[in-house]
Image (cartoon, rainbow, N blue to C red; front, side, top):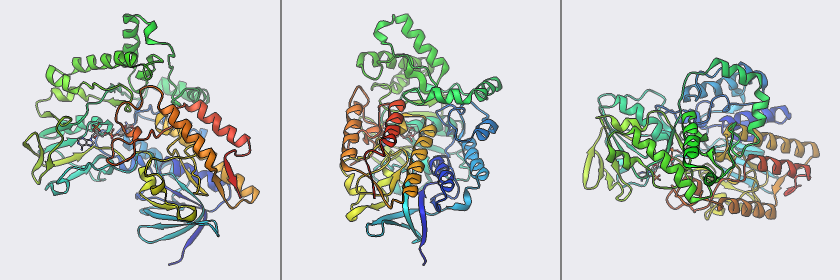
Length: 530
Ligand code: NAP
């Protein structure tokens, strides 16, 4: 077996890995991408469940590094469905001839750094060995599926599907009794579709979620033309907002508004639809009483949409709105008006076990023919800690992050020279429009690689102090307001045994981008080049 050697190895051929490949090629460095799937697309390759759709509008959820690409591409709908986003990723791969530098169906098992040679040795599960001077984990924030710990899960006699590992061939539910476990975004998107097809659907809900309607529609040609005419202006405006989205955020306090004014502000956002709902007032995520007014507005909408008052109440979340990522729905709550759909609460008393016949809860067996697990991801750290990554002195990343991660800017870690992460913990990532954030990270990493190459440096490594200070800053920001009062994947609470630590950076896109620029202007402050 001969080892392959490259200047740069990128893990993952989603939007991050694809763009980084394109950038690194232009630096004149040799580069290879390792991808576990059989094609590009990352999250949009794996999450193929019925109804999978982006919760950021199509005209904003796209690359901006190539103006011809953004001008020529046509998105058919306001919010893109998974097959359209995958088609876009495939188009980008064709357009920039990316596939020739990607090894598909190659899953990374380990990556070990040798200090003397300053080379990473990467071993895939099929034993292929690849050597790299620089190594970038472009493995996504929501890519390591989280399986629930429920007794007997493997004993179920029928097919079991995880929403994040959906089969490529069409799954047929007609004539079947189906159970869905979970009521997060993936479940909320898929449930209306499955309910329309299956004979009967039972939804097992541990915690109800807030969903804002998408009001999805075909792309308005006038809007598309208008945006394309002023694309750079819109992209620049988006970068001035905390989430990197072209949405107007009202910074004012809800307490300065009358009840009628509040109602109209929320109604306006409700009618517009989508994630911008919380932009109505500036204090919704810092003041419990302000948050409760927004939450009650949404609960009243659920009560209007669900005919049976008892079911409506069971679907009404009682926790802080926005502390978990909001869901964006198309007909979710109305699905519970159907005769073939039942909601089973498993919050107070958890699912007892899965048997070959179905799901046992509250002492009763719910017999089903198919089981859907919609229990999300080991978010932000899972894709990194599931690989045996060892840096200087054999330091294990998984071991080091046992009590929670720490990074410098979400980009690099002390003791792990020449390893970069795209949208790692400690970066705005999941609190932002992912595609522009990915582009910013990729540009920063590519520029840093270019700098190392031009100056003849063998290694670049985050300094311990810089990492400690950055991580402390991230935790300080994370603890402000209401973001951590609810269990969520933002704090790792959805994975049993995972340390409860606030994972993303919450200082907003403008502050983060500025910090990254300042680091470079100050001679890569906080990074040691050798
Ligand atoms: P999720 O938000 O983590 O939801 C998982 C669901 O499974 C929750 O309802 C959770 O209940 C439930 N659950 C977990 N273990 C359980 C158990 N043992 N018994 C019963 N219920 C259990 O996962 P997700 O829906 O896959 O979404 C994750 C993130 O991916 C989203 O927040 C979003 O950022 C992203 N996503 C985006 C889109 C989009 O762009 N439209 C679509 C899908 C996903 P608890 O709440 O009680 O923990």
